[in-house]
Image (cartoon, rainbow, N blue to C red):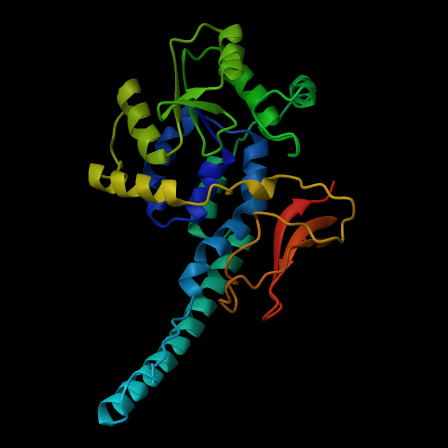
Length: 320
């Protein structure tokens, strides 16, 4: 049985190449445990993941003719005219791209984009927690046992407790996550955290537990180990490119699922969540430090405002 963390599903909103795995993902559904918590976290964070991913693509080139180094003359005048023309063309293209990405972001927000539709089908029968699983998850958090971070809301702990119950008869387990709360690393090889491994063995003596941080490595390994069809799996060359792209994605993919605490909900909060580029005006490092403001999601959430154009980015992080 496979346990796939929220950050791996959110990667579909950050990389076009990962969508190549959609056909094979459909066939894997009977083997994947999906909790309602994971499905909710994906919906809660997918818009912000998408807008962050496209920020770099919306940057407009800023060329200038170094007049102080070039002699006056026809060549310099022609170069200057060509640069002006190119910049005007780039600005027009930028406006078109901005409109296009705004439409895509709206589709993601409405869950009408093709990735949301596919994942919606995939998450259709996500497992809801029972009272016992909630109690165990709260205890796990209180004693600071993995997975999950102390400052996070109850999330990974709950999914793990549900997974323990769901996988109690599975002799082989795959855990796929970009969040190393699940893992320890030995000579660049991932191993399940010893406490989590003990959790699994307390339920059933497992023949194997496999840990991966990329789809590109995990899915072929699962198919080969279980002797399943590889129909729809991208070529080895495509998988290598996909792995490189996955590893280059921001490691803070799921930080929008966490809760940041502060003495005052209106005070500035330094945070690694602050985006480097504004998706609306493409200004670099133009966002403020962030503050907890009234949110479209209800209550107070951590939000950043572009000081250049006023664009407001809501991370979805709730104030506790």
